[in-house]
Length: 144
Image 1 (cartoon, rainbow, N blue to C red):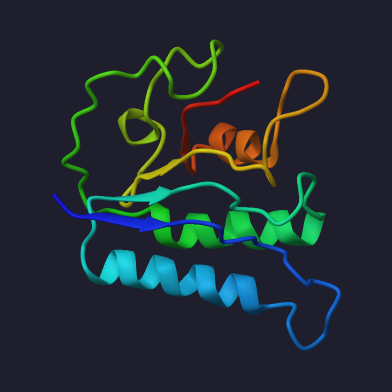
Image 2 (image 1 turned 180 degrees about the horizontal axis):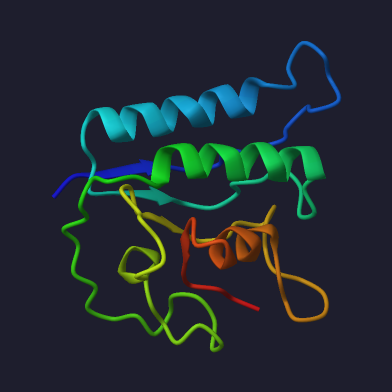
């Protein structure tokens, strides 16, 4: 089994700085390219995917596009989930996105939140919940 691990990607960091606004996205794109290049069975993201708890719309759109580009496709997934209790929230029934018949996932991404993207406010949601509900990641270990 090949697991590719990345953490503290901080997407959207310095997005108001003309010189550095794309740095975090270029680094994340390299993570995806390396993970797909070595034919990883899944990508594990260890928190702080976003730099801010409420990423800008620009950051969210760029992120969704990148996840769609690298995580969806025809490559079969050979992972067999054993315990799903901590994936998603109580409304999702604990399934992984690559077992969803409406999704065509080729690179599963499992993610936990860090202090920059932790759930807060009404419903205890974060930007990771947006990616989870879009079927692009498997968000687990959610602490509220």
